[in-house]
Length: 316
Image (cartoon, rainbow, N blue to C red):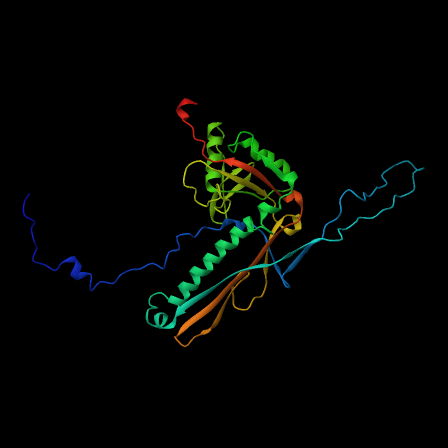
């Protein structure tokens, strides 16, 4: 091997000492698009309580007169009964305390403001947790509040077009979107490809989604696969939701508190707690949230969906 040729010139390492370094803002690795909180309709509350008043269906049916017979002139009488103990949804809070050394933020805040970046990252973490709670919370989470009549089992484990059609038979009054883990959406795409019916796509909210029967499949990692956001193997089971959203549609809605002190985002506040004797600034960050299903047929779930079926298309 020939001897390395050494150039009598300024080297890269030394030159870097005079060069400007172009930096990015801190990147939050667990950040997701949080599509659910974009496509779900939200309602702001004044008092933190949302009461879902429902009619007791079937117990006091109203008869109506619809006849051309002149002898039938008596109009039926009756009334519509209300639930006497309707469910009330009370906002829950997700909170954390962020500490920032003011000496650090004073000295090292160019080109990026250290306090602003710390708050931004913490807000993103709280919003990720908020979306997860809307799906999985033991009290108000969507998965825990779906009526038994709206729960569907897969035909053969893997998510097939027939399975999603069965969900559409449950939420047939103006369904808004399917919600599924990316692996479940991928598995459904493979089933469609296998049958020669690749699903079309649609562009909404700045993203591109595949659709079934014109309804977009919205991805979220908050519908876990075997209890994990990021499953370790190829196989695993999850759920797929079909949702109708909107208060005027008697659908599923998210809830939040309006007009918070220090409001930074919908239902989220950032408040300075103070600066201690050591110069550490403390911030309280809180998000107030819940969700409500206004009618049983506003949501349905396809359960025990297997995401790990793959095919050799050359043999099909």
